[in-house]
Length: 324
Image (cartoon, rainbow, N blue to C red; front, side, top):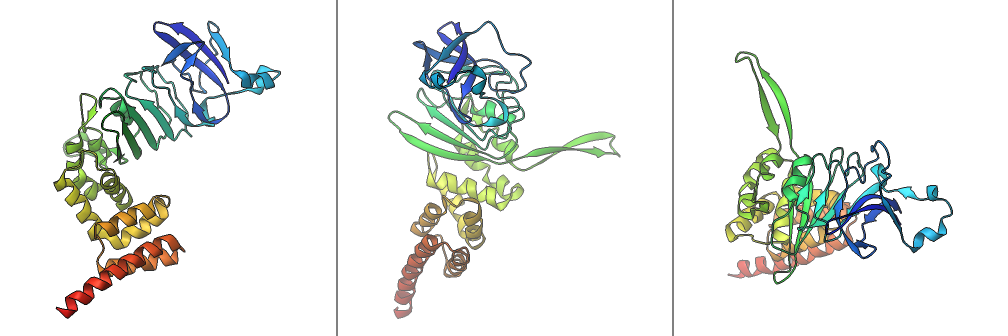
């Protein structure tokens, strides 16, 4: 790995980075100084020219290269994941501009300042935030730039040591002309815009977030609404009993069709989801049979086994009711 950097107050500013494509893990320090800032256009391929007023740091992996051109600049389309160290507190303007293959952004709550257009041209699907000093973060600023569906994984370290997984659905706006009134109206589609307003002083308001679920049911695809409910139920950080009941009732009502959705879109998580649904008794006899049929059609032996165990449990209960 090769890094161009500048020395600034309290640490180092990362200007440019060379290394392996794909997953980028920014080191915690350079020459004993912590990396505290990401320079403007640091990971963008649309930078006009490379900076000359920089210092250069290289690790041992650079010894295998004879010429500097053999190293790849980690920017633009060759970045899929970016992991920032815990002491990065600022990201400059357009730092990830045009990184259209960037899917995962991982930082901490110590990131307190973000420039304009940081994620312009990106399509993030997951944001991970590690919390060390409370529950405030730059998550709202990140979501403001991404109108697509984004899953946020919030890891609270310390005494709580809790994890929350919250989904922010996609949304978009459309300008519609109102000819009689001679005005142009903005129509919003999807509930994502409302969910992105569930913050107070840079902290996610879980109560307000859960209250938006009725909007998701009305405006979003069933796959997004179900994923939102599952995330809150499987990782119930600050989830009230009333909100839990609402989420569970939605799953119970739509269970037959949701199984097919989960097997298609959440394959890695489907076993854990269905195991939860069985433990919480969210299946009826009819929805269970439909789900079992779907699992067999998809050749999902593990899922079918979970559902067959639940069918046996329901069978025992039916027998007791019949004898009474």
